Length: 250
Ligand code: 9D3
Image (cartoon, rainbow, N blue to C red; front, side, top):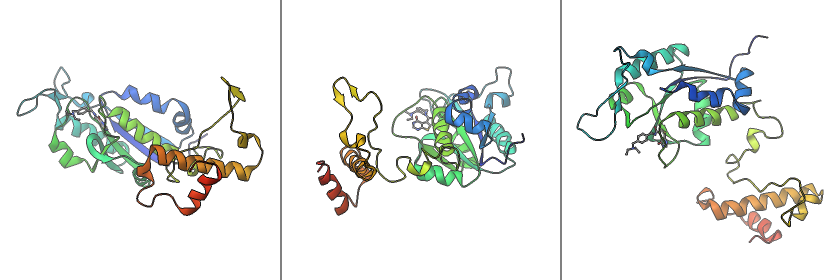
């Protein structure tokens, strides 16, 4: 069978292309790629080095620790990556200095139809490459990881989950957390008694209206306790306070 047009085409520039098999070959994202929802082409700057040691980095001007990725090899790998997408796509560099990644940015990038992701290693990339060739820098949070590969994979994963048809009916992207602006409610499955702890009565009641109200009340309570920033500046509405009162969560 021939594949339909993919919803999104990704290209990645990385010194460690094998890492991306975690995304392309496994789970929801692996199945979606097999089904033709998305494609990924990988481009290693080392393959674009010109010396016999295949050098991609050098010591920073001005001194200091670590090494910096060199602009010429990055640019040659980027040109190959762009070519693989027929010239389309925003060029996104994963850097600790970037715009915070979010559900909103995932949707924005998805609407482009194609994206080039550039994953750095070492202390960073030569700033002239970023200035000349990168459209936007993206960070995945205020913590330090060892390179841009895991952040790039995280960005792709979040985007693939948003593609219509990738998630089944039961777990549609519309029901996923953050879309509604609340954290998820707690979940329970068998056994009914675990270490003496019973499943909440309402979930065994078969009253689907009560179950929906309880789940929303739980979601609001958890968001207030764990992520009050997600409720600001409006806070909790009068109806939602009523819901919390109904379940003794106020
Ligand atoms: C002291 C300077 N460090 C910057 C915080 C150096 C440095 C550490 C780790 C430079 C790059 C990296 C590798 N990290 C990324 O490439 C990265 C990243 C991250 O570390 N945190 C959150 N988002 C991202 S996106 C890319």
